[in-house]
Length: 253
Ligand code: G
Ligand code: G
Ligand code: MN
Ligand code: NA
Image 1 (cartoon, rainbow, N blue to C red):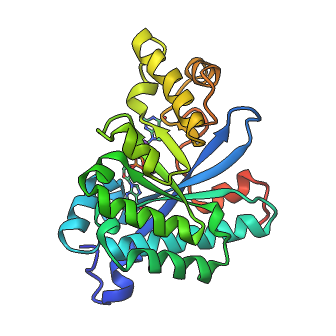
Image 2: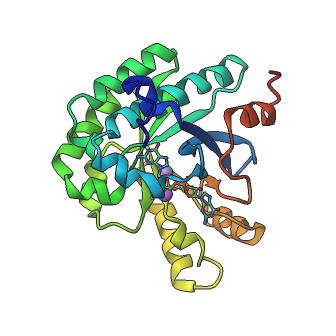
């Protein structure tokens, strides 16, 4: 279906759109970065979220093309924001298979060069579960990515089973605390303790700690009080088209 236009190369990605969700500095309330989140603009079903089609994309062997499309789109949009005086980080999620694909890091390198975006402003998000399924290959890929200058974020942190020794070996720059913790931080003292100690762990390892899934002001106050660096969630805004981001940043069209 993603390829139904009959133009293999353009058709496969023509219906994909990339939206961006802001990540907000705890200290200043300013936007620090944007996470690219892919959607499928289906001719009949409207905007479809990735949880509905990513598995099919994987099955069809189209992950590399999806990743490349999202990465190139996100970097080209980021270039516009940077050119307008907003040097924001741009975060892109990558699928499990990317970490074991030898062509992945060269593709990131090519996309960075194409856009001219500083590698330091690209954050590659990988879920903790994925890292643990192929720990040695993931480590090698992570080191190559860092070799380009790009940042590495461990997404959905706290839900997988990464050992702390693996975490200290991994050249990550950011932990994203899974939103299942965020949802319970106000009502569960044990969860609040985990949030506070994860912030401490991240900082001792020299990592930025981003809390995701912040939906209300009380939760924001709790996680900022726990010392997190940035927050992301519906309280600040949902993922939105690049034009909306530009408007929010005060960039005239
Ligand atoms: O935006 P949304 O909540 O619908 O995203 C659901 C899941 O899909 C999240 O776990 C997110 O990481 C993942 N996702 C969103 N965009 C991409 C993408 O471009 N590539 C990959 N591999 N995963 C994505
Ligand atoms: O796994 P990852 O962090 O990449 O997932 C991002 C997903 O989380 C996106 O699908 C996005 O729509 C969703 N999301 C973003 N903010 C919130 C929030 O405040 N609450 C909930 N429930 N989901 C959120
Ligand atoms: Mn993510
Ligand atoms: Na996540």
